[in-house]
Image (cartoon, rainbow, N blue to C red; front, side, top):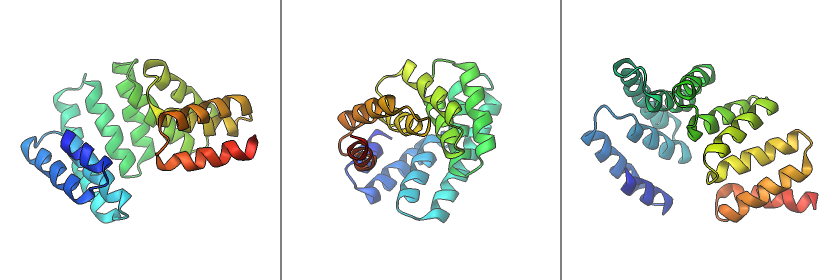
Amino acid sequence: MLEGRILEQEGKAGEALEAYQAASDLEPKNPEPHLYLGGVHEAAKRPEQARTHYQAAFNRATNWTRREPETADAYYALGQATQGLGHLDEATSAYNRALELEPEAPLPALYLGTIYYRQENWPQARKMFDQALLHNKNIAMAYFFRGITYGKLKKKAAMMADLDHFVAMAPNAPEAETARAILSAVR
């Protein structure tokens, strides 16, 4: 998995796909490789392949929640898979269950925040981004999404602080240009 993540970050999508597939073959019950396979295909604008992998991740995560119904990571993986499939209500339920089992887990809160963000439920999105950052201050994307959310809530100073923090943390992220443009427009 780590090799796939590194290759993906280096822009070597083909090699990353091979590494993730090898990880999937080594761990046939683990949904994570299929989540990453889905993400690579989604980024490459191959929705059918992405859907195939998100469905495989969903199947594996569902089985995991049945085997280990008190494991937060299983519900987080289920949330990731259902969000990848576009089933936001099911993803919301899975992330909420993960947070019930492990309230200090930052990633279910982050991705739950992204669902509320997509639904333009700004107060709930902000609450989830706050929760994610409470438990892990190093999630750059939480600052980006919370900054945009603050803008929607008409909190300019908070928006600017979060977007500045995001750009400092992830200056080369694709979203950094959006953040810089917003900051430039409001200064």
